[in-house]
Image (cartoon, rainbow, N blue to C red):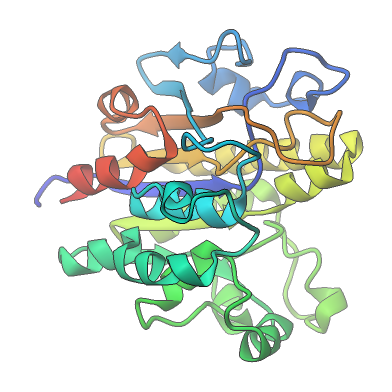
Length: 305
């Protein structure tokens, strides 16, 4: 296990690889210098989805899982975090939450649990306000796959105190929504600062996962304004991660579960592939081994163990 790189995984909900049409694809409108740099200064699209350089690789991941219909979060994220074709297991795409038939798989075979069993140290970086914990008490089964996977380890979710100590990241990146939730003492930070914080956190663990949902929200709203803001926030956040990241010992992995925001002509999800953006230690070897959502967990497990 000596010498195995740290992995920082950023999960972007609802981001596919779409057409190069700026009328419907906000990635061809937003100012995203860091994402464009990772894409060799030419944004990827369906007809041109691969990018390779000395420092980064971008490859498409098949998100349909071989099942008809529109991919959904419950099955897509379960496949992403376990390496098992969740949609095939239940015979359909399902979401937004994993159905009861997939919970034993998700709870028992997720990447957090697998890393712990291998003696590695995983961490879920998102931090939540008390309102979320109140919701959790009433609706424990109506939780996203990421949260269910982490709670299956017996580890707690991060709360406001963790966020105040700088050991967690807000779901909105900048903490700007926390004052309205009753937390006037939690200061706002820039998306760049949030990225730098995530990089610092990663030094204490072997695998750190952060989940960002506002990309999917923008897609469902069909809002170009929201989508551009989400992309530019993610871009700044990514810059914050990479600026201080030791690329000889850490690898950044950014990916998604299904398409949505890349095509604002529809409120629904798409059957587009999703991007896997990799930078840092071992990135090209990992990129070459990825072709679908189901590859991510097995490939990362081999890397880290």
